[in-house]
Length: 131
Image (cartoon, rainbow, N blue to C red; front, side, top):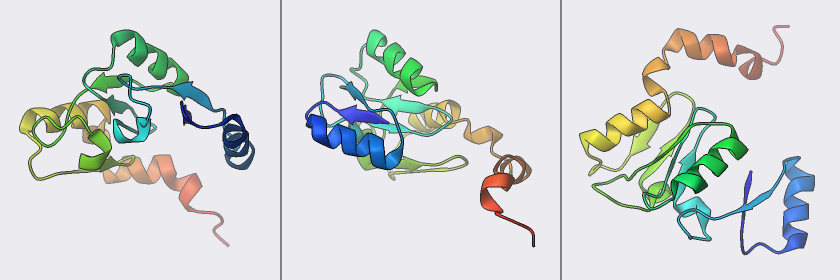
């Protein structure tokens, strides 16, 4: 989990304890509300187009997924307001261009998300027991 820069130390500790995650202080394109300017999945992520290459590399190594700078909805920099994504699909705003969709499909590996692949990769997490 990437922590917000303005979060107080006590809140960071609560996040770490409750969610059992490591919390990092990070900005995206000098924006402290990182959740508005990026979208991540376990396959990849899109960040604000003005995010520096160094920041992208740092975030990518922290999260261990590939990242790309991009937009949605014909150039909107507020990525999270224009799309949601999971392991096998993404939903974007109506104004999202074909170029933006191509970047989204590529970074989140959505073309690889065939039903058989999803069932195989997610079987253990979806099925608790067969009895």
